[in-house]
Length: 512
Image 1 (spheres, rainbow, N blue to C red):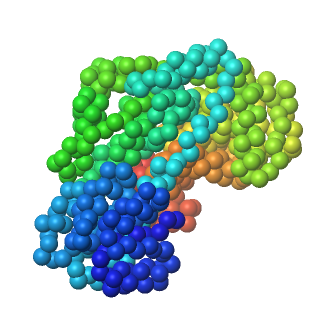
Image 2: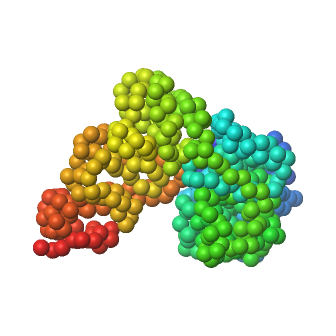
Image 3: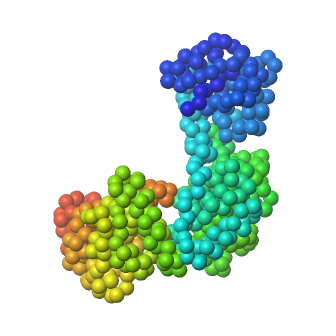
């Protein structure tokens, strides 16, 4: 971590701040004038800059303006006197993170510097995110068309709309488009618009000014500013709230936007790449997506094929994911027999590449030997083939947003209103017994890992609610809807199960 720079012509102020930050194990470097600090910027940069406003020669406001021009993401804290609030206002207009009014409490000063430090590290983690494009594998003709399209777009800054089913690798293609574009040395910022709560999405995209809403203690740059001169990838654009679509359209139209609570336009030099698995034309017809925004995004359309259209790529993808999974876990790489590879190549894969990767993770953790045969694959796959002649991975592996329970080969099992598999306990027992405790726990772990890697929020709450719902539904079916009996069997109180049934929206319960 880089040091914190202190710029003040008052040696006592510098000394006090140096000692206080040293007690926090934070490195510092001090300057007696703005001119000295600007000279040092030619060779290095700080993590946070703390500067007095009134100094001989270069003022703190002059220093702030110069720093923000070359290092817009650097948090700058200005020190001012109570009688100099006009300068404080000017400093905020110039992009200051916060100000310290003299005389200041040293503990509050350290806490403020700590907050600025956290913001600086957050910005740095975004801007130094790996720019190396993950390997995109594919020998099928459908993927060769994608590669050719990336090549044709390599010297273009045009807006691209990537479409395709969930799990086909839309973000990988977006990263490849960035890597081979003139903006390759600038930031690539990715945002899943479906993973951010609606109330926070506007601030996440456009940033906010200090005091714009409760908890906005400092100005914060949004993703558009973080991606300045680079590429902003907006995943699941079809789920963007309608009112935010209007703001996005304005940015694409005139290249300006306003931070939340802001009154000054901010210029955006950003290439936008959007992606969706939804039919945007249908959403336009349904009044859920702005037609003018659709046409702004749909300049160049790049469709990614599903794995059903490129089955010949499945063996090389499987080998790649097994090597990757083994490396992550620090174990020896599993090998697939030719028969097992042929079996996997014939599967229907509704989750596409992401679901195939899940399966390879499962194989690395759960398969007993180093050479994996068909019999070592999840039991649901082999049972489905034996019972129906059709291979399907849809019930064997968890999809994002839901925990998939192993589906039995027979028995009354159906999808509930919340998307979970529910059914009679006798019908589910064979599958649970076959999978074993490690089986369903392993699937739960894989699902949690997938949701976390996809950037989903409140994972504990989502999975916890699904787990509680499954237990209560199963207990109610076992007791024919008798709530009190179900509570006893589950080992919880009557009031608890009543509250849970209401919270989870479970139907079919009765008191007696």
